[in-house]
Length: 144
Image (tube, rainbow, N blue to C red; front, side, top):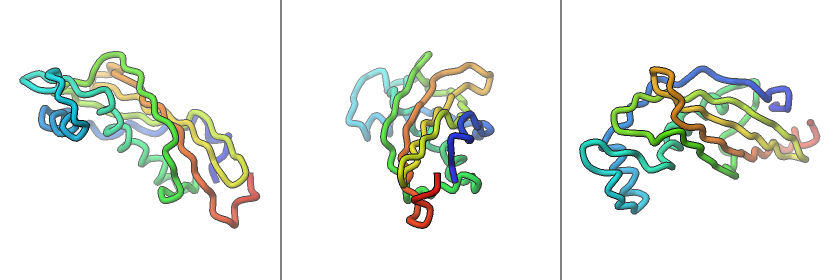
């Protein structure tokens, strides 16, 4: 079961993700955002595009058997993204997730996690920080 003892645990970076013009255009269209910066030969990605890449990195938490997390019991409670620069078409990006803080309250695990997105050359581009609420099964409700 996840506990505050897991705070500080980091996972290996994901495989490189290529930000492409097509992916940026699709994401902007899904948002209904027609900002011209998201189109053309050298588009930047909408700020929230980082969540696409961070979402893949969170899989490391869900697949860590020691934590005992079940994706079906997760509610995504909060999301913040701090950019050093925009993601751009042509970027090859890895994502490194870390468990920042864990609190256990009743039958709920509150998990603060951050994912650092970096270029394959090591340039930090942004950090996506999230709070997840994980409800424990009834037989684990009293354990903390």
